[in-house]
Length: 140
Length: 140
Image (cartoon, rainbow over the protein chains, first blue to last red):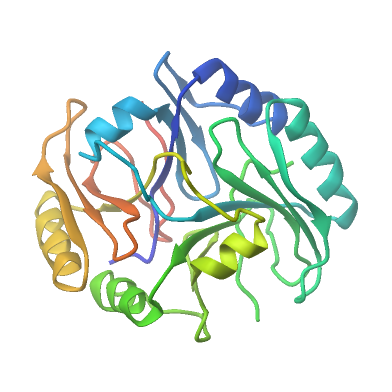
């Protein structure tokens, strides 16, 4: 079995609002778009944004009283890219959760919520290399 | 900017219970383990499981009254791998959400919640190729 995650799907309540955040904020280009679902080809997997009602129905999760905490991270190549990207995301519908500061393990990171309140960490982590294809490797 | 997600971090309330699900259920090997955090090197990014209290503190999210719906997917190579993997996950602390059936777009998929109630789709999707490195590509 591959040690892999194939798709990450976020539930979205307002698709134009979500598109603005991901396509204008992050600057990502979709590979597929419909009114209810958008797919983005990412670094080795597929990222989907789907109407939350449809995702709940598909996964048989009628209520999400406690889905549990989670976070997605987008790492950038240089320290001085963190705050400008956070500003751009906030300008496109994101909400500031934590201004960028230095974590104990080094680098720089802050947190922004997307328009559907999903947590994104924007980080510069010089210890974890990002190759030409955007693939990220763990290093301790 | 790379069109990439660098890290997916799930909040976990009981680390041994979570380890059993991911290491014995999925069969994934960690690249780093501490009592409070475990990292797995995945297909082009890093997957982390972290004590939920620490993740909430780090991301400045004291409450998650409505974190929003999301799902992670693990795609397998063949139709007859879906149900055995779902069974193995359930045997290692997972909860059945939706038995495997055929979605409108073809293939086979079911849903299992991990021990912290995070949603996993286990899918055979013959339309989306998985290469030797486990990288998944969108095809419409």
